[in-house]
Image (cartoon, rainbow, N blue to C red):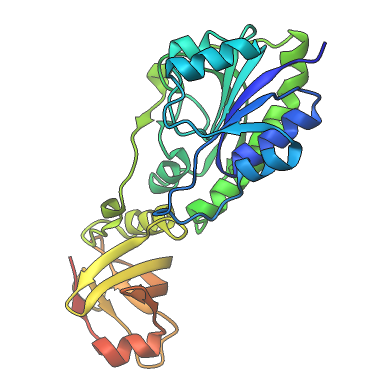
Length: 309
């Protein structure tokens, strides 16, 4: 008799891992996912489209924990529940439906970066690695025993979206590697030591505001953490909101008082001198949504220095 799993999934991780389950011989009678938010930039693949291609029934509950949804899941009698970047917490009542366990793929090396948007937080905090962890779901978020995990490097100039793509790849790898052991019952679960980890909440667009009195490393990490397709890092100038989309660290810069912006007429980039006296090259930037070249920046603002805070 085939192993049966109900899948809660969204985003690229959801697409890759749903396909991995099906290719691994798991029967998936139902997928629960989200309707795309019209106010959100959709840059990732669709779980609903993949499920339709695979002939799997799909539902879009606003709340997966209602009695109606719970009754439907109970009737399907799944061996497992899997959550792959699903955006709602599942109640203990839902988790108990799975006869052989409920498991989630989280985008960090648990117990570090439990909670929301773990890839963005890891980049913001200047981590040099992160990864994906398959773990048992319990009432407390991202706190259950670990099945398996795998790391990926974070390079100095990686944007969060670059890291997310790396994490997506190893998430699929971890699931494919773990699935046979989950199915045959040989998997050994490892408890987390939550005291050695961390928990972070969600982020808002306003959290992208740049504090130029911080160090160049901190500003660089913020830019990388929220660069498009995320809402972006920004600073408000007299002429409008300047979005800083990509930066590169330049090292110490002692010619002007920090913090400030300046650019030569033929310079390859705008220079931002941060609170620690080190500079960043602003490689890509936009004013109120319109991309600017360095020449256009100089024509609008002059060569500087423009004092910022």
